[in-house]
Length: 264
Image (cartoon, one colour):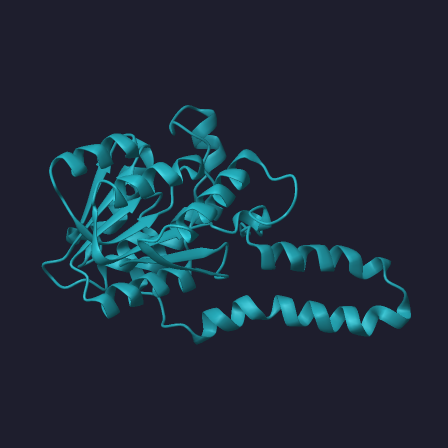
């Protein structure tokens, strides 16, 4: 049986609600509703069709992540936290990150939150042969999962996975004086502000570098009332970096929200 990815982005959740409403709508409104549903449901597949294709290894990685029994892995203690296949960055976002890496001529990338290594590999594919992605992952099982797939790619050698709490890794990188052209945040949402402080106050991000953050719409909770703790944390992060004079920031409605912030 094929495992389906549940909707987590605002657009997918909107489609889900429209589909639930359809049987309840009076006949005279069915035409308008079906038109709205087609408009919303057709956008994501069209974006994927118009994006550069994924590499074979990226496609295989998606299939492996979807097939994995993440709930079972957590239940038997294999993973240290509950993980979901929906945590994948996905085709369009992966190609967006790769394009940004190429456009910037980036050589060093820091990623906070590896999961299965999809976004790390997508960015590595855009780096020169001497480029490097350092990616932080707290869970040893997912780090091993990612490493196995990265090792199948000719670009996998550019990726170094550091296992351990992300903030501790970032503090070590700050102490070592390391710097990066692009930093991508995609881990604990309640720590996004702390990650960004290391990037900016700790000078991990070079001037002229790009700070990117995933899930900055957080299922619409960033702007809807009564958010969860994660949604409230994302809203606080969004306010903080939008107001930071060191950054030129835009939040793109790509998937579950992708924020791009250029360090002046």
